[in-house]
Length: 300
Length: 320
Image (cartoon, each protein chain N blue to C red):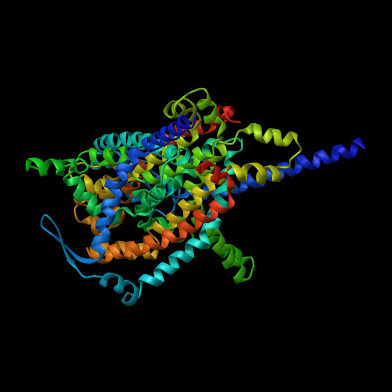
């Protein structure tokens, strides 16, 4: 009997390994080896020569330069972390709200969903760069399109003319431009939440309604727990996204260094970034694990 | 008594209507914000370039023309680039979805030794900006040695077996097949989270019936994973379609629609001579037409696929 059980677990383990084998091969070949190479580059000075690279060891010089000499690197890293912490909860709550609205049945839903999908298409596209570098578009968007934020000057003027004090006006126009960039940044999150909401069977809500649960109760007792895995996904994705965003000062510095073909120093920058974001993500996973016995069960 | 009840009911339906109205206004405003750039592209792209400065017509131009589009299609070699893009994009997306779904199931549902450590590498693959590892990857692609087997072969026979994958579609298919296509790690993560949210009873009953892991996966899990599959397919197609970094890196002789659009401005400048460089507005209408030609097919695709988001509601009846 025990023998049989052992065989069963082992067989299940083998099946699990079989499922991830393609990924494992790809991971070693397309991720680990290139990353190890970049770690190796970070301890040297790299020159691109005909037919390959030339590497001369410099020890920890690149890292010393990063932490001691470079006046941009560390402040940029801190400000990136700060803006991530600020935007994370807002994006998650906002995209959940929008996804729940879009999940309802209403007329014209198809059109609205297509519109909310636009950021996913445009944000990763060449078209965005062309739009931003387009000076005529300023005239139309009555403000700057830079970083996808519209300063609604018309609104500001209108409010000022109505005699509302300047402080309040700035707050309102700041809010509208925030909403704009928020809607642009949440496209993927909205879609993921929407797909997550789809997996909750409507019967659950019906049953809860019959039992006399209010909408508020069924949100907290059904929607939130059912969406836990997706929320973790969205948290992690949003963090990584705001970190790898091309508007992020640290990434700008990193890409600039790569463009100047300063490969050794760029690799050091990249590795410090990996270390920091790994610590942050590690903390998120740790917290998520502590609080949710459900995921504990699944991991078993 | 009855009267009171009626009033109560009326109040309830009124507040429901009010919430509905409020939501409609909110969604309408946001939708307008999101639609703005596209509206801008359309209004610029359908006017002749002389009309760009006409202050009398901001949104609706006086003259309409499709010339910008036809010219753009010629310059970008649109249909040819489209063929290249489609062949890369569709095959890579299918390969990515299949491989990542298997891996996602493995991570979400199976017992694997050191699973958490391995999964950390999935997260790592999402984190790494492509620019950081493109150099080693480029070198790997330029002489692909069949995962070291070619080098091993070289040690035995003295002649290293390697092929150049650059400028072929294989430089996209191969990573996609092994879950490391564009944003592959994210797809694994999406599938893992979806699978781990499914009730355990689903598999258990299949196991009790004597089905093996693979049969359970194909018969029980797969039919319930439609929302996740549609989502990932959509993302994968969009990101492969929009990718210009890898396609300008790996393909030197062929163009995708994205890389063609990236070069459109300079190609048009060549066509128009140097006038265009001193006056960037000359080519503006064509550039916006090009943008529409790039995002148009994706919008159509989403319109077609989004039905499956709705349909899957009815299908999940099995769960529970």
